[in-house]
Image 1 (tube, one colour):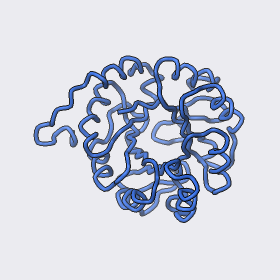
Image 2 (cartoon, helix red, strand yellow):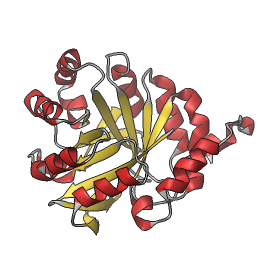
Image 3 (spheres, rainbow, N blue to C red):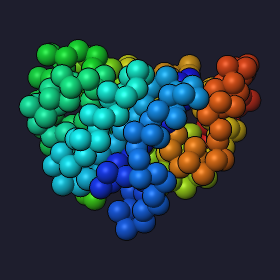
Image 4 (spheres, helix red, strand yellow):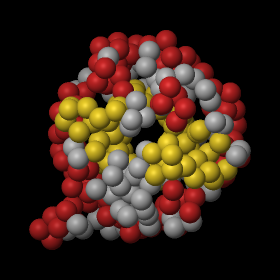
Length: 255
């Protein structure tokens, strides 16, 4: 289970939103490059970048900062937020981004994703952000009638690298992940699932471990790392030392 620190960029700063609300912003660091170097230094093996300005407007507002981060660290970087054209996705892949994350276009332009996969197999991640089982798009500002499970199933055989599943109601709350929803998505997918949303302590990370058997191979952690309720060094050690046991009656998935 790979723990992936998140850096959310808004106006060139490292921030976190509460449940995707652009009106509820907490700033953590005005130097995202420094933050990226720190996560790498203490053991991160991958970095998750989100261009919040891009997600909202579709414009590459934070490209200068993104390029500085890529050139400053050695670990792979995955990036999402406002990637809505083939040209933009290829621009990022050619600039040093390891994988691009596409969310809105998975619903609005699914053919674009298939074309990108043909050119860059296993370098595309589909981001599925859901509220009450339905997919939200355009920086979570729009809610669709598309089922998260249906969307996951439709892309999981097309050559994507992974699916990032975010439960919007738990994101930024530190109250624990939606284990039931994570399992449901993993069960219909044939590619690895990266969990996102709600991690508040190391116990929350360990609660995800039984989902490895269904294909949940990573977890994105944001606010908990910045607030200090999860220490990355300790969390990596806890994951390494965890002895996977079958939870009785699957209760862990529905807690």
